[in-house]
Length: 196
Image (cartoon, rainbow, N blue to C red; front, side, top):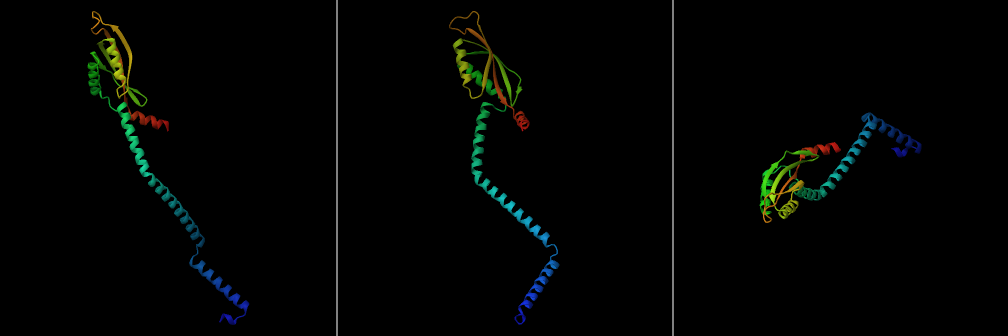
C-alpha cells in the first residue's frame, strides 16, 4: 500500500508514524529523563560495587601473607613479654635471685621489693638488696644478672668492707637496687590514643 504513494507521501507517512511512536512513548513513560538518570545512578553504583569486590578479592589474596605477619608479631610479642612481662612475678624473681645468689656464693641479708612506679608504658619494680660476699663473687653475680632474659638494672651499688673477716672469708657488704620492669598495657593504649 505504501509503495503506491509517491516518495514525498511515503516520507510524510513515516514521519507521522515516528511522531506517533514518540507521543505514545512519552505518554506511556512520562518520566523518561528521570529513568535515564536512575539508570546512570544504578550503573555508577554497580561500578562502585565492582571496585569494592576487586579490592576485597585483592585483600583475600593477601590473607595468607597477613596471617603470617600476625603469627610473626605474636611471636615477637611473646619474646617481648618475657623481657618485659605484664605481671610482677615477684615470687619467681625472688626464687631466681636466691638461687643465683647461692650459685655465686652470696649471703642474701635482705630482699625488699618496692612498690611499682609508673613510667610511660611500663612500671618500674625496684628491689633493694643487701648481701655479704667476696668482691669476685659479687662481680660474678652481677654478670649473671646482666645475662638474665628479663631486663634488670642494678644501681645505687655501695660496697663496704666487712669487719673482722679473714681474706678467705666473705669480706664485703654490698647494697644495691635491682630494678626490673613490668609492661603496663592500659598506659600503653592511652599513650597510643594520645599520639593519634
